[in-house]
Length: 134
Image 1 (cartoon, rainbow, N blue to C red):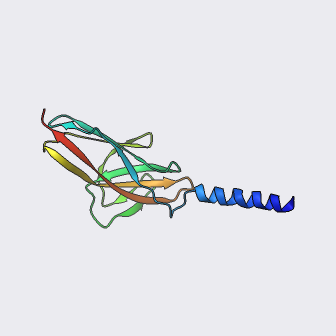
Image 2: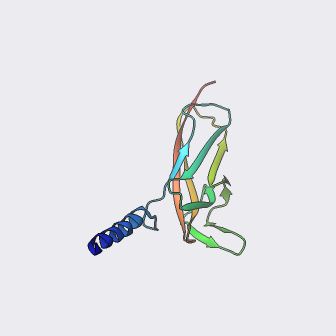
Image 3: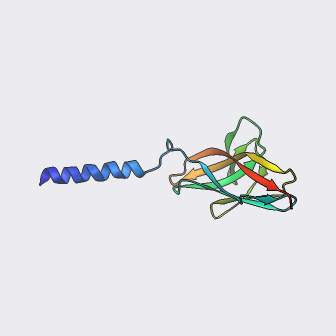
């Protein structure tokens, strides 16, 4: 009986640790975008995190390098990033009007994220989008 309790406790401990996300687990941006977008019509892409125990603090594009986290009383941000993206309900909304036909890339997205225990880190991302004629 005692050995069975130890096995159950050990199993619960191992399972809880295997499903927890710490700073070493990879957190990536996932994008939702239409398969085909019309030239000169607004394109809206959505981005979110693949881990639900992290939240998006701020999102930027067209940043300078090197990137470092900036702490201030009013705002947590990324040094070298000034062009902000719209973030609402833990989702990044990227809206723009494509003018070039074919497969294009929107890159240079830098996102400041915070874990449940208030650790901060930067995640980078990009997405491809296909633009067709009207």
